[in-house]
Structure formats: C-alpha cells, structure tokens
Length: 466
Image 1 (tube, rainbow, N blue to C red):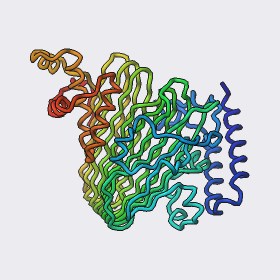
Image 2: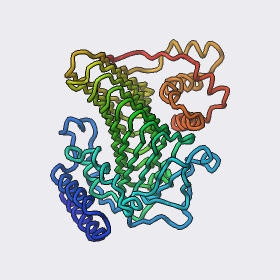
Image 3: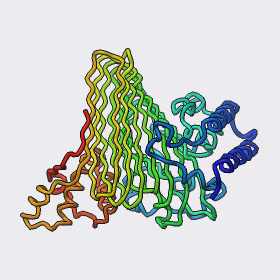
C-alpha cells in the first residue's frame, strides 16, 4: 500500500517516461494536448468525497495502489477472444479486439464499405486531420480529473469513421479485454467515433477480463467521444463486465448535430468499483437522445452512474430511464442532470430512475436534477426505491410457481424494461442471459424468457421525488 503523495510521484515519473518514448513519433498538436492534460490532472488530483460529484464514491482504495502501465504487458501471440463472446456469437458482430489496451489486428475483422476503422495509433501515424479536429475536443479534461488522466496517458484505442449516408447492418463490437500482469495494471482506452450525416449504425462497447478470478486486479480508465452528424442515427450499447476486483471509471461523451438521434444502453455487471459518466450535448435543433441504463450489483460492489443531458438548442427532446437491481450489501449511485439552456425553447425532456432492492443491507443514493434557463419547456423527473411486492409473489405462487422462480421472473421483468429497448435481437438475448447469470440463476429457456417479458411487476415505492 502506498500513500497519496507517492502515488502522484509515480504518475509524474510514468508520464516523463511516456513523453521520452513518444518523442518525435506523434504530431505536435497531440503532444501539446497530452502535456496540458497531465498538468491539469496534477492540479486537480484524484477526486475525493469532498467533491459534490463524488460525494458517494470514494477512490481512496484506488489511490493507494502502485499500478503499472498495461503497455508493459503486450498482447501475447495467440491472444484469444474472451469467453463472454463465443465464436458463434462473433458471427453476429463486426469485431475489433483490444488486449490490455492494445489493438489485436489478428482478431479483428475488416469492416464493410462505408466504414473506416483502425487503432488510434495507426490513425495518428496517418496524420488524419479529423483526429486533430475532434480528438480530446469534446470530452473536456479541464474540470474532469479522470478524463485528464486518460488524455495524458492514452496510447491506443479505436478510431471509427462512418461515411455519410452509410447504413451498417451489423453492430460494430469494440471489445477490451484485461489480462493478468505480474503487478496491478492500469490502461486508458480511448475511442473516437465520427458518424457521418445521414448514417445509421449500432456500436457495442464491451469491457471484460480474461479471467474472472479475484486475483485479476487492475484499473480501467476509459474515454469515448462520439460525434453524431446531421440526421445520423446511432444506437450505442456498453457492457461492463470486469473482474470482481477491478476498478472501472469511464466517460462517454456525445456531441449531436441537427436532427440527429442517439440511443444508449449502459449495462454494468462487474468490477468492485465502477463509475460511468455519460454526457450528451444536443447542439442542433431537432436533435433527440435516449439514455437507458441497468446496473446489477451483488456482494460488496459499488456502482456510480452520472448522466448529463445538455439541451443547447431549441426543439430537442430527451428520454432517460435508469434501473438498478441491488443485492447483498452492495451500494449504488444515480445522479442524472438535465440542463436546458436559455435559447433551448420547446425542449421536451423526461427522466426516471427506479431501483429494486433485493436485500436489507444494500443502499442506493439517487439524485435527479433539473437546471432550466428557458421558459417554454416540458421537463419531468422522478426516482423510486423499493422491493419486490409480496402480493405479486403471492399471485405467482398461487399458480404453482416456486418462490425463487417467482422472484426471478419479477426481477427479470423489471430489468427487461431497459434490455428490451435494444433493437438488435441477438445482442438483446445475450444480455438477458447475462442478467440471469449475474443474479445467480440459470439461463432462461426461450419460452420462459418470453413469458417473463410479458409478466407485469410491481414494487412498493419507499421514496419518490418529482
């Protein structure tokens, strides 16, 4: 265990090593951004519970570990796809694989016409003007220490460019696998996605561990920037299924132009401590977004979801639904903020957070927020916390269904409100089984799964804000 001062000294030393190693091999504009980001991180330091946005999430355990850069552990020859995605399932996706943050070209697939993709390193080598225009221009590191840390240390990741009016039939899978190292490792995945005007695409961002064993101890600090062009349609699914001892911090930033549409589905199952921040800026009239999330925790897990929908232009709409299922003595946080700028008249926004507590010792802290600076808007928000209704259990048991199966049916029906919004059926089915496995249940047969979808559920509301 190390103290905070030594931790900061380690980051200073590692950044100096990184600068020497990359000297002369990257463009000057990126060098300037990298240096400015590290200086900002040095000023901000790791956030503590004294910061309002981190009030319920302590990074103290993380700051006491001497993580080594994942670059010290390069992908081994013959690195394989994780168990979470079987070879048969890969036929349903266009896969791009990363091992300890490094692009594994041998396991990745050539994309169809209308899409350009590659590792961030390759794109930077090609001196793409698009990278200079967009990389680190949307996810701001000025007031976000973890974005600053990622921007300073980013080395590899994905660069995806979807052409104007291109329609991509299969989801693009960006899969990050963390492998074991001699010492705890840290890696900083960076993704930049440019969706051209009029394009339609589905992207699946996945984080998992090569081993689910407790000794696989590492830190993922990810940043994704998505620029959505005029009239473009993007469905974005993220699954976080890290090692039970891992730390996972992530920022997902959307910048939407006129009449664009974004639908996100964030599913958090793994890691000991996880925090995800999603920011959507609706920067064109008629833009719309839908943020959906599901977090399932057991044991001593802690998950923190922070979302911000920034209505910067008029005639935009947003919908947000986040659901939590907490068991054991796990803890959760939901903080959802909706901002309506002064010129964003005719805004229509709704937000809802619902939480199902399966044990007496689990805790959820929920805080919906509205900041409205316009006067012609429709905005609502609400939060509920409760348990499975005993009357619903009694109803199912009176029809010959066992207690455990009844609880499972009602819990999965609760989760299906989020998973059922995913349009791509093979992915939707796989994620339903992931929820079942997380809750310690067997995979649902197809007929039973369909029955669960139609089963109504009720929870006893213990707390509600509007």
